[in-house]
Image 1 (cartoon, rainbow, N blue to C red):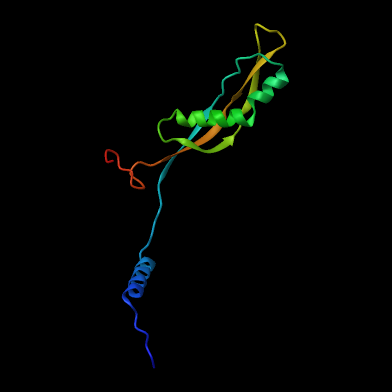
Image 2 (tube, rainbow, N blue to C red):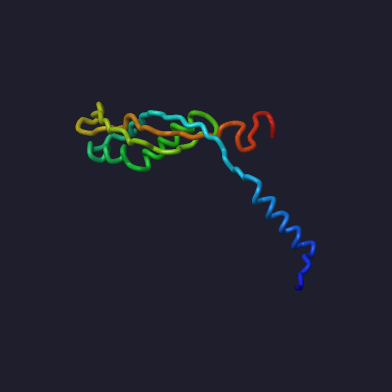
Length: 126
């Protein structure tokens, strides 16, 4: 029988692979979640009711305000999920009869932030 001798490089690779297979690797980070309800602001311009309602409940407006709701909680908060789009409410403009301003009420947003101390982030240590 012939045995092939392992050179030092092959032996090192085998040692590293065996160490990695026995070492549990965890890359978990903990998060803090916060559920918020918020209202959007009415548009500055008076429009027909259908046009104002469409603009107020557009995907762009809802996403933008969801982001603003989370960011107002402080540094590091961002949108995890928008759970509900709320309901659209309209009011007639006082300066222009027949025209309306609309906004969305009760947008339900879940915000997420990395928990301090997890994933190597220790307060006061840089």
